[in-house]
Structures are given as C-alpha cells and as structure tokens.
Length: 412
Ligand code: NAD
Image 1 (cartoon, rainbow, N blue to C red):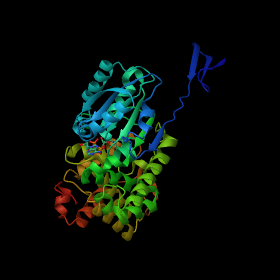
Image 2 (cartoon, rainbow, N blue to C red):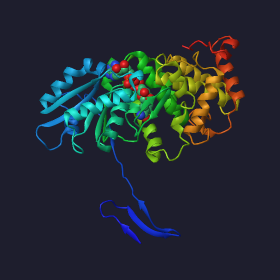
Image 3 (tube, protein in one colour):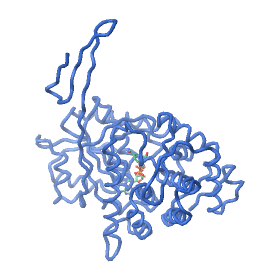
Image 4 (cartoon, rainbow, N blue to C red):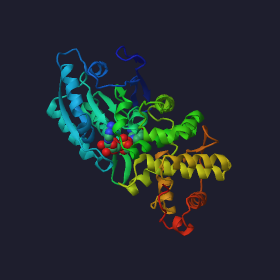
C-alpha cells in the first residue's frame, strides 16, 4: 500500500512483504532553493538588502554574526553602524580563518557561539561573513546545529564570490585530507558585494581568478578572452569600477563566472553525478594543496593542476600547441604558479589514487578540448603524468632532474 504525504508533496511510504515478513520503503523529496544576489554597497545604510536578509518579523531582530578576523578589522565598524541603523541586535563571533584553522575544532567554536547566543531552529539565520574558509566552516556548523540551521553568506574574497560562497558544499580538512568532512547545506541567500575586493591583496585576488580561469577553460571561451585581455588590470584595480578601467570587464567577468559555476552546480547539487566539469583542476590539487600547506593557496594549487591537465590534454592532441601556449600565458599573466616542489611523481600518483576513490572508482578527469570545452577521461597513466610534469618543467625552464626529484621552482 502507498501512503502519500500531504506535508511533503512527492513523499510516500510504501509497505510491502518479503519472504521473511513485512517491509517498508520511505521515499522523500527535499526541495531546495536559494538566492545568489550581486548587491553593491551592501553596508551603505541606504541599502536595505542586508537588513531585509536578516529581518524575521520580530522587532528588533537578534542575529549571530560569524566573521573573519581580518574582515572584522576592515569592515566591523561599518557593519555595526549599518546594523544599529536597521535595529538589528547582534553578537559577533570572530574567527581567525585560514586554511590551517579549517578543522573541526573551529566548527565547535562556532557551535559554542550558536549555543551561547541561543540561535533558534528556523527563523534567525546566522550570518557568515568572510572568505571561503570562514563560509565553509560556518556552513558545516549550521548544517550540524540542530541538524540544519539556516544561514546567510556574505563572501568577501573572490573565491568566495564565485565559488565557495554560492554552492551547497560545506566542509573542513581532516588530517592530511582536504575537505574530507563536510555536508551539503547551501545558505538561504548569498549577497555578493564586489566592493569588498578593494581591500583584498593581489595574491588572493589572483587566487580567485584561478577558479574563474577554470570555468573559462572548460566552458566559456569568451570569459577566457576577457581574462587574457584584462587579467593584469583586473588584479591591479581589484575588480573595482574605475575611470576608463576594468569596471565593465570586472562585472562581466564576475557575472559570467557566477553564471557558469551555477549552471554546473544546480543540476547536480548533491553530486549524484561524479563527472563534473567544475572538477577541472581538482584531480591532483587537493593533495598538492595539503602537502604544501600553508605555502599554496587553494586557487594556486588548482592552477598547478590545470596546468598539468592542460599539458596532458596537449599530449593527447586535445589542445594545440598554440592553445596550450595561451593557457600557460594567462597563468603567467595572472602570476599563478604552474608547478611546486611537492609535485613529485609519487605525490601525483597518490593524489590521483585518492581522487579515484572520491569519484567512486573512476578518474572522471576533465581535460580541456580546445579553449572553452572539455572531455572526461578515465585512462590517464602514470607515464603520461610524468611526461606532463617534465614538459611543464621544461617550459618553466626548470632542469629535468629537478622535476622528477621534487625540486621544481614555482612557475611565477
Ligand atoms: P580565505 O577564507 O582563507 O581568505 C583569504 C584571506 O583573505 C584570509 O586571510 C582572510 O582573512 C582575508 N580576507 C577575506 N576577505 C577579505 C577582504 N575583503 N579584504 C581583505 N582581506 C580579506 O580563503 P579563500 O580563498 O576565500 O577560500 C579558500 C577556501 O575556500 C578553501 O578552503 C577552499 O577549500 C574553499 N572552497 C570551498 C568551495 C565550496 O564549494 N564550498 C569552493 C571553492 C573553495
């Protein structure tokens, strides 16, 4: 017999019998929708967007705000003035967020703050404000607290705005494994204010441009052209609108990057499908990033992986010599590394083996096919990886033996 649920359309309970007795099948659907909005001048008292996001019908609203320590020192006063002006009572939980602090202990710190504040179960979203490390930690805490508490994200780094802050994934590192513990729990709303990028240092801006380059290479040739044409000035001007500068290009780059990323994430939010274009640059990089910690930033490790994957693609005839040259030139233009001393053949072998487990026994490795398109492959050999490392090292003018013995200079 089937019983449909009136509380949750599409959900049902079937009872049936097996040889040994009674059995039940529980089926339920969980509908998810969330908003990602570009909202310049978010902390301008005249802009109601943030106040609206935090309002709950109770007056005055009380909210817990978990904020990155650097972001607090830069924007704390403006934030406090904004919230006071909009009658929002708040408590700040300040986290010194960096990759080495992306661990369960920091999640518990946030959970302690949620408990002490008395975050209610449904209608008082916690605000997470900071880079990808901060929003990943708060997202995980929110998904665990009372099994799911709502939250709102304000990403303040470029990686946050175009990647970490707009998807469903939360997570922390565990032992030497990148993002090994995590959940799927998107925020109800992400507010993107590119103005925050004005204070981001050049290295972290480039770090975000690496993830944008990823989207460009696998699905958006026009975005690649924009990076090729404006990459240097996007960094110099921190993607801010400016006199005769990159204002228009910056906004177009940001929009195309968010659009491209969401197009890939939305149909596969729970990652039932493990062939994911957005995994380009993420086959070797999780192990590279963790082995080099704290030396390499996330996007830098991704760039090294993209460089290696592009050479693999070139060796297979998927990228022409000219296309590979353009790809590596854009990486150089953005001052992103294409190699690092930890990239030994052994580490790359272990990295790929770990990724194969993560992808359920398959490589599912995205490789670029021309610029703006990609294919998935499952038969990359260790020989090919070593040949690609050597090619990269040669192009980087690093002696051959050093490439194979793990002493490769960063290609900056
Ligand atoms: P991050 O959070 O460490 O921030 C980088 C630095 O910038 C920090 O020192 C921070 O204090 C500082 N900062 C933040 N905003 C600033 C601002 N406006 N002005 C000046 N300084 C500012 O690093 P990140 O690059 O934002 O994020 C990287 C993390 O994101 C990695 O842990 C990665 O795994 C994760 N990530 C997650 C997803 C996902 O789907 N959940 C996707 C991509 C990346």
